[in-house]
Length: 499
Ligand code: NAI
Ligand code: MG
Image 1 (cartoon, rainbow, N blue to C red):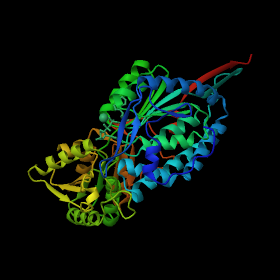
Image 2 (image 1 turned 90 degrees about the horizontal axis):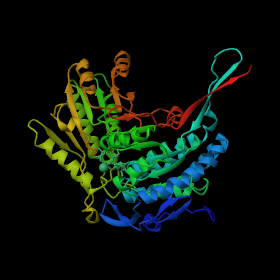
Image 3 (image 1 turned 30 degrees about the vertical axis):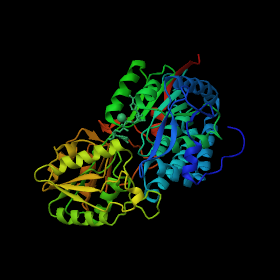
């Protein structure tokens, strides 16, 4: 993109209108080929804030052609030079953190202080992290026999199709585009219907540095725009974050072309609190783990909490007391801790799970915090955080991903039983154990079936810590050097006869 540097626009409504009806292809903003668009809604008020261009197969075709052309020159740059540009994107995005935080708050209803500003900062940081890894795209020399030089090298895969969800769109996009580009691929992103604006703005900012066509972004719905992207013959790799159901469709479609796929899907992450745990830390960990500040809309949400009977009641009391003082309200207000659910559809889904739990004999639903009282938020998708007790681990609320502020707490007596129940799930994304006993802690790290196991803490994605699930939670890893090497390159073996 030529011309003057984009200045941050701190009025999110003005920025939302400015980005209306645009895709970003080959370095330029343009409407969809069809001219069609769909509304973008503020979930805190149900007001329409903009329209997003409705990309479809024709737009996928144009974007993949641009990406394919750009990729050839991009791959010929020195790896460190590509990394430098990605790093520069991260540096520049640091100046847009506030702008992106406000825009993402407006379109997703996530609280700005606890969620959106953090996400925008981590987004820039992931680009800076991967920007430094260009020189790590190393191959090997393989001992074969005298007179033969045998090498492997890592080549890019070509055009990467990246499909992202709405819950943490900037961060989840960064985990895909940064390693893909540093490794020499170009990318076509398909944003989520509910949150197309902040990611578009971020790509527009990055296109001031990147050559045109290296990073393209489409908005549109799943079947109309996502599916043709996955199926396009010019796309050599698909990386997807979203639901298990859609992930399976993506995997099947990619199988038709025999291309590699990375899938980050759902979770039903267990947290085990032993009788000897530091309870205050465990309560804090449950709140962070459950992502109550994000209305529980997280694939790693600690939605099944197993607490030893000796501390069960105290744990519940302290958890409820802490969540009670969290403030639900206007997501753009600095005082707000908890924003809204993303959409009517997700709101209805979450509410129906809560009703189902409440209708279950023996179950108790502890509703925490307070609904906001502001009149202008009366149509907002706010749900009070709920702690369920008295459900069993085979109840639907304990088996299915709710993607809302709902956690189930179970009482256990026996550690072996807690481990067995924790593992008794279709998912395997993350798990935590809370104890002061080293032997128990280490034993649990070995036995909990999850891609990420943490002891006495509940951190979120960290740069260079491989992140990704097992079982139905997905395939492959993100966020690390290994993720770039294993998922965005392919190895070529070269044998040279020196004789
Ligand atoms: P989804 O998996 O349908 O959507 C994720 C992305 O996939 C969006 O960009 C969507 O447009 C795209 N997509 C949908 N159908 C597609 C298709 N046939 N081909 C290619 N791309 C397609 O998730 P949705 O409908 O937004 O939410 C449903 C449930 O999924 C949630 O309640 C939650 O349980 C789960 N979810 C999990 C996420 C995670 O981080 N693991 C993120 C978002 C949702
Ligand atoms: Mg869907």
